[in-house]
Image 1: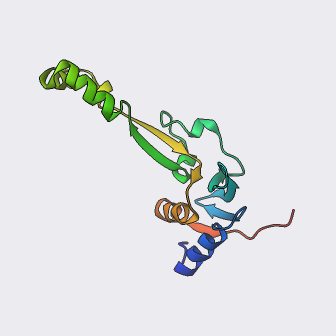
Image 2: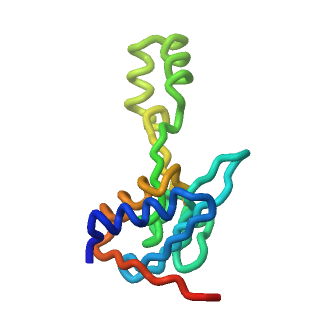
Length: 141
């Protein structure tokens, strides 16, 4: 079941206040979205899958089904500044040859993060990657 426009807006509004909380059932996983304090007076939305998050999900080296609920980050292994410095030092032709022989200079690193900048970003992501999303009612503790 997909979310309607009104349901999406309701979830975004719930995640726009400090310590807001939303509980969803996404593709058979319970996904809790909680607004928590980050640095200083800023807040971020934290994703918990089945009540927790694990450090092994952060690395892009192994595949985990829980990673689809997290924020994916792809970065170059070597910064553009370092690449430009090396190219200037060894010359363009030699640098191109080095890149062709050793993919280290053009490789990327993939990581996953449990935090999101806003509720809108996480809700849009979940709507994109999940086949079924259901809003679960909060249960009294």
